[in-house]
Length: 324
Image 1: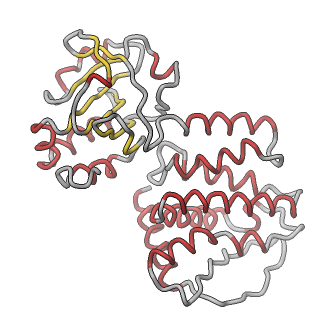
Image 2: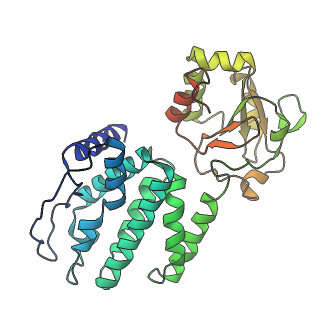
């Protein structure tokens, strides 16, 4: 997955370097597998960030506008490999754009999908692309996942008249989960019991920054996170100074495995478990895979939500200079 991700990033930057217009290709024959018509960035747009924004907002325009009533193939005639590649490039571009542009681009994508679905009612372009978008932006194993980008899209799916009622309920649930503990909002408080048997709360922890981890002592990725953090002197210095506190919470019902391996956690971390099993059941946090990592500031405002380990370590490895 990491190698595929690297290829997608390279393809996204190549697109920005060479994709310029005007260039008009002949409309392809309906119901035929065909290549993706790349976005045409006007030659007058030369500033890199402006090119990213334009490509983000218009990435799907040519592809969706070319769908015809006879286009009933999956992905409107694209091969599955090409559809996946283009979605990866699109998401990579959005993550380079300002957040507002990314959300506008997701809404523009949904506008185009609904228009194409109405034009080709016997096709499945909306359902196919919704599934692909879910895979890239919401699958917990995707390195490109982003609930902030997925939220406007899945909210539109939940309200769309073109979506089957049974699917709308699932989309509405996803939208509700994406809305929990969004970046820029206060993190939900909770009670935990620490390794000394004391009952404490998230909001009772005072530090410039809090790294909140929902993990498990038997989780391989959780162990890798511990090792990676211990190997970074800048991160260790933040913890030693007290500017950063790490809170690792075990959220499963059977606490015996956690008790047996308490000594495996770094001594400088705060470790605990959810005594009432409410973090999952009361939907305080949407924990879909372990570790699930949040970075909070001193006011418990969410800076990073369910972030990739590499994303968190990049923010921390600069000795805290990159945290604001």
